[in-house]
Amino acid sequence: MAKRVTKKAMSYSEASAELESILTRMRSKELGIDELADAVRRAQELIAICRAHLQDVGSELQKISDETL
Image (tube, rainbow, N blue to C red; front, side):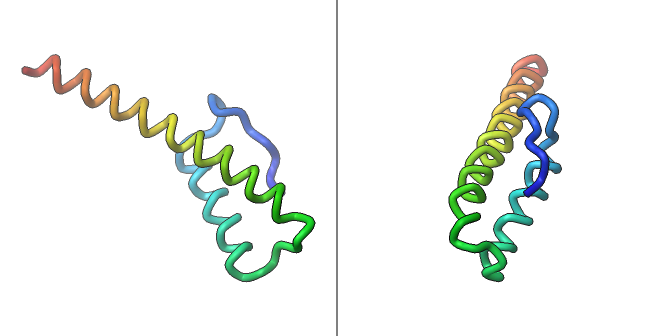
């Protein structure tokens, strides 16, 4: 499994790509039952990272929108 990266250090694109990799491995049944829990846990972390980035962008867009009105 890929090296753990903190929320601040990982971009949305990196988190999304790693999440897609995990999903691909799950779909292709590359993950054994022993790895599944770790993969799901990591996927949850990556989803949280992506969600945080999306919320930040949403807030920034709202701020820009408010400034222009």
